[in-house]
Image (cartoon, rainbow, N blue to C red; front, side, top):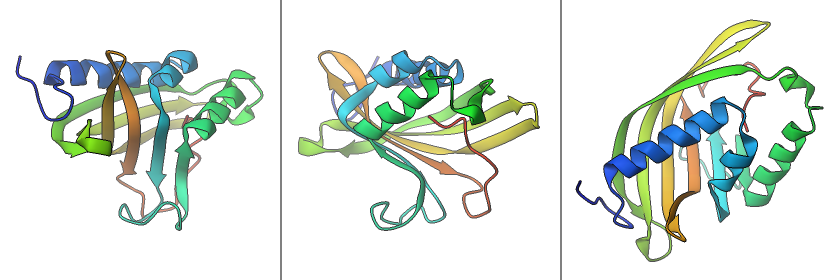
Length: 166
């Protein structure tokens, strides 16, 4: 296997990490999903313009590591009624590409991938699709998420409930 940009990660390692992250989210394994994030992580789902500054423009989600933890604590209580019972989720991650490096001393590997997500609820089946940008960092020998940006295909339209987002 050939190492790619950043921390010397191999493409197969990156793919396996992204597939595992998707499975944890789909199966509502909040503890495992939360453990994937770095302490300085950012999670962003833009509303409208992908290039807008999320600190000054509205976003569907723009969370730091503490907010990610808070969101997961709410889901663990079982009292987040929009997810009681939880949505049935399955996503396909594809077209995985290493596109560069970022972060302090360019130590993060920047990866992009496409996704299609099926969400089943009593109200019916919703299909979501888009492109994800990940900044992956090796911490204590393990790949971790330092940044995740989910650019929805239909971000320029009114969005139905996205209560499944963690």
